[in-house]
Length: 338
Image (spheres, rainbow, N blue to C red):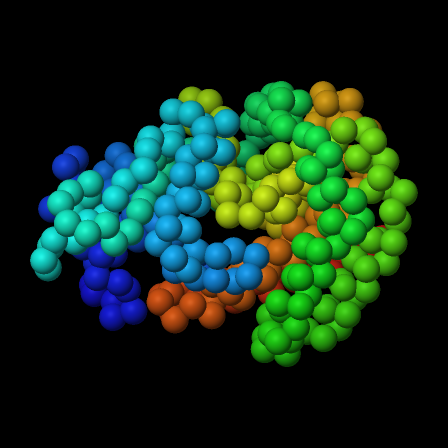
């Protein structure tokens, strides 16, 4: 069904005729920053022309650059999934992929992974196992060991560097207080805890000295993991280095928080135990609660942003608002546990 809020080229991509490959059942998934077309055996991901300050997709050239970065960075963990850059062209009234006419948009083309093996689906089915957590750890530990590090990257792991991201979240969500998902009590409790923790400069400096600040994934949770014939970890942060240059603890805490969110506290603890042992990173535990709180709050913020997008379906909008409320409750739980 047509949606008047969708761009014409997105409507065109919902038609099988535009694709050179078989694409009988096409579905559109939206986030606050992306349009994702599931078309047959492939996926096409496009950036929305938005500017949130921390993310700027406002021009066609910027969206192209971010698509190129997305391909480069995600091939670190998924070289066989990220296939290439695709142009959306307009010639007269007709749209095409890699065709004739003006380039009106760019997309990242990906191989489609099996839906039933998506970690979110596995969790939903109650089938996530310790063996799968072990498999994840076996992929993550060498990834972080090989990930780039250095003086510039280290600055993002300092208390000052981390505070930029943390305090920005509170600035961007203060206007949502009292609208159903975030209460004043939650906001004050979480922000107070985070600001207090950020005064522990020695802890952050220890992590830098231990070489734990790396070019990480930045968005490590179940929505970006597929547990198929092998572990696929995809859709890393490409649009802003300061969300990807971080303590390994911040990355792993995201996944642990996500397991808590789904009521899998035991597997969350198992993940941290296995990761710390395999990577010999015992210092991670000192940072865990803080970064879990940070990550839960980020997910709550994103839920609010997505719910505020007029192009998003009303049912999706309400689901995002409900999820945001749950994330803020979880963040408050971590703040209270300090």
